Length: 441
Image (tube, rainbow, N blue to C red; front, side, top):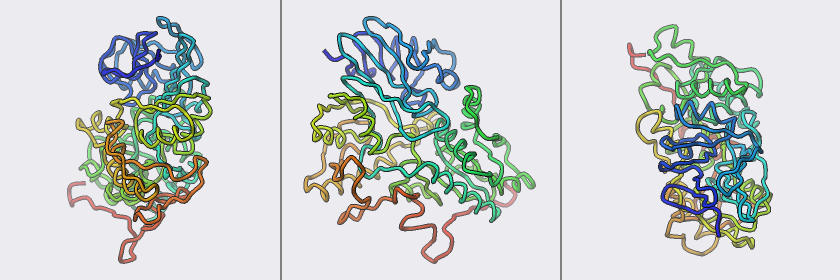
């Protein structure tokens, strides 16, 4: 009998009578991490990792929370449960469940890449591994984080030299703090760092948890004028995606903007964003690391939850593994940040829609088979038209797909650097600076 099954409320462990990251209110919830699509209000009791407590309470308020140190176990019903580092964000954890002679592990979201703000991913041996697949296509291969940090610092320095602010959009929880820590390690900072209120409150939670971050200041609620505007000209402003295109940006005067996300590897996603620069940085595992993580568990059965579900399931079956999928309601950090910060959803389907078109064309070009029509997971449009991996899991193969008209930015650089580069059609610098309306800074 399966230890974990999918129910309308979430992923349910029968032996322990609890849910993992439920999306509807339940009596007992085990939480992998504090992103809004995995941790929500309304549950009777919460169990999470000790390092996640400060962020969870800052996001969910006064909840009945029990915490476990990594590797510590607790008996829940007939199940023995322990939490193990997932490397996704501060406090992120995989859930290990032992019962009835079986060991299952639910990954939540995870990455294998180094991150100075959280405990690294720890492979956990198991019989069945429940894995995410946000970037479960062979085209997703991340550049080194150190290279991305250097590219962001160089862009910031160039903007400072030109007397304009640098506005960098990224997810408020996890990505923003990782970027700040990376930039501090990349070398001298070109200027001060200001953060949107939604970012700064989480910076404080990280610092309260003992994570070292560079000095930052919250962007004042009042619009800047005169000398205050001038202060932003050397600055980096870190803001959530929901701030893009808002009147909040007027206070900075002239600025150039960038977006840090794994989706920036796909050119269409960057064009849809309309930003000056795209920086490829994700807090999820890329294709090679998904395969490495799955292999390291030793599991013979894999269950895929959210993201690029169908192609990963098919790939794993082709490798001789038993692979299935759970239908979940996990969305993306951006959708939930939009709800929490702006009172309305910022569509998580934006990158997924780009990838759906990309994937459909790749399916036909690389395999000769038509795209899959039915979604395995309804939280990602990309699972409605998905490709079969035409490259080996070891990372061999080129990024562009010949004959499809589809290009991805080189995984050795950033999306803003490949192909269309940082220039306009007329050869002028591409940076789309804006000016605040006169008298309304």
